[in-house]
Amino acid sequence: MIIKPKVRGFICTTAHPQGCAESVQEQIDYVKQHAGDQQGPKNVLVIGCSTGYGLASRITTAFSFGANTLGVMFEKEPTERKTATAGWYNTRAFEDKAAAAGLYAESLNMDAFSHEAKTAVIEKIKAHMGKVDLVVYSLASPRRKDPDSGEIYSSTLKPVGKEVTRKTLNTDSVQVHDITLPPATEEEIAGTIKVMGGADWELWMDALMQADVLSDQAKTTAYTYIGKSLTMPIYGEATIGKAKEDLDRAAKAITAKLQSGNGGDAYVSVLKAIVTQSSSAIPVMPLYISLLYRVMKDLGTHEGCIEQVNKLMTGELFGQGDLNLDEVGRIRVDLAELTDEVQHRVEALWDQVTTENLYELSDFSGYQKEFFKLFGFGFDGVDYDAETDPIV
Ligand code: NAD
Image 1: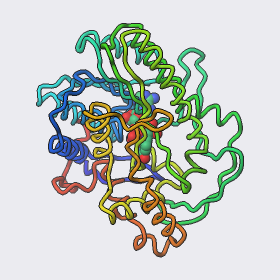
Image 2: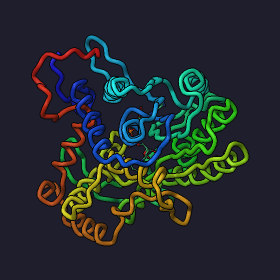
Image 3: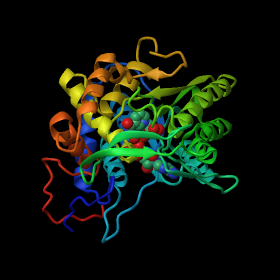
Image 4: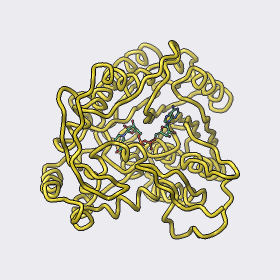
């Protein structure tokens, strides 16, 4: 078939296998160019390994430290008539490139929230890795089935306490307009914490500790976003922010358990706002990111997914100096986004931006390019008019 992008709302429903492979290769090239000589983990488990920050974590640990990696993802396989999801193609490409570099890389396409996924991962670790030194928790999901009660919880993107009206950008129709989000109910807040909070991270770490598949002084990290005043009412102080606060609680609980066993630490790592499949679904974020990219590119401080994770792994978690922790004990690699200069410039543009001047004031064209690249479109080396087999 000839594979072209098909956008529905904030998602692209097709993906290009060769383009996704190019995207993985670009990230591998970046990591190799920036690899230092520090030691890192040798066996890594990445939960949410196929796109965005999780994929970048897998690529960084494999190609910077030479780590064997086991991944868990939730992706659609291709059929004769339908392409796979991008994460599926990314993962196939990653596994091939890791194998060519002599690294073990296997991925389980399973619901990470289930007991079955935890059991399957433990079996794989025992069979192929022995023990793991690092567990990266990088899930972003709209719902979670509780593995014990079977109850399904949904995550909601709503403010807490009062309704909020904010400028937003419909990336499909390219319209800047106001959106009013009603306050979340108690049930919606609780549901979001169940899905995006720390409960499942703790279940994973409990299962790995019980099975004795963590090495001495193993580390684990889960990812979060904090942001400042422009995004606070719809992120930091909203339902998703409440869920992310729960990660801080979970990090402390996990660290206590690790230290009463073979040692180790659990950290929440704060990363900057970037274009991913998940962030494009959050109201207000695409407009904020388009303006942020414009400002940070102008200032020469722009970073994407792989740059952020490379900084986290080689500069912080496995860096030579002390960790850059905040008052809550979180690792901060998002600080360049939060400087007064960046935030003031974004705020000034925010007040002026309209549908008419969007391309002029913001980096929405850069946003769009990156969005399409998430699905394997827009790479120079790929012939998008060529007949392509969706089954890789
Ligand atoms: P993403 O959508 O690119 O990746 C989500 C990953 O989770 C994919 O690998 C997907 O397959 C996997 N997944 C989802 N549901 C699953 C399930 N039930 N079972 C197994 N795998 C499942 O998202 P992302 O933006 O990279 O987000 C990853 C983490 O980083 C999230 O915690 C997010 O809050 C955080 N973060 C994101 C940003 C940002 O701007 N995108 C900024 C800071 C922190």
